[in-house]
Amino acid sequence: MSGHSKWAGIKHKKAVIDAKKGKIFSKIIREIMVACKGQDTDPARNAKLRLIMQKAKQFNMPTDTIKRAIDKSGQAPQNYENVRYEGYGPSGAAVIVEAQTDNKNRTTREIKNIFSANGGNFGEVGCVGWMFARKGYILTDKAAGEDKIMEEAINAGAEDIKESDSGFEVYTTPENFEKIHSKLKEAGINVIEANIANVPQTFIKLEGHDAENMLRLMNELENHDDVVEVSANFDIADDEIEKFSAAL
Image (tube, rainbow, N blue to C red; front, side):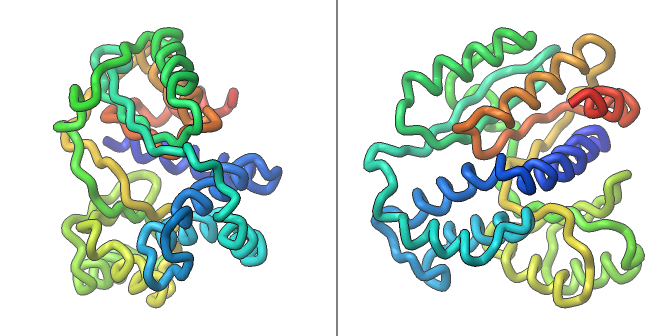
């Protein structure tokens, strides 16, 4: 499990760098526009929009840019749709891909090719979904200290808290996610990453060539223009993740 959280931390840091180059902003802008399309554009009444705005702030997206995306939501293509893909990585590691596309046939073909090129197998929706639970996930750093982080998270109603090399992982129900996220920030605890995600319930340990292929699969999926979120149940040693990420 530590490997999975380590990868999440590294990918978040890389995404922050990419955001500075404008690479990730286009994805978030599209998410905002799709969340607003035909819906209330007031974040107080649009839970999905609020979640994406929190994500945008994690990547330091300017408030003006967020507002422009909301204002332009009426211009979003009519045929954008949310799609979900499931499959297997090396050694049967489970993978879920959430995407947004205006051309499902193209996106499906490209996602299939990424699985095939990296030792994976594209599957039917539902083939691995049962291995995951939809949870609020908040990764904090350790600067505030274990006692304070544990106390604040538990008092706010967190379901589970786990320590990893990357920090403390706080798990919540989707319904309590916003409240707990806000409470931790109000307490001065630095949040590295926060979202509602498909959290694996079991993990598969990977090493060597399988580990490298799994990380390459994750990287290529996450870099695809249409992909919003990738979840997987691998456990790879931190040193292997560090070695691979250094070459990104």
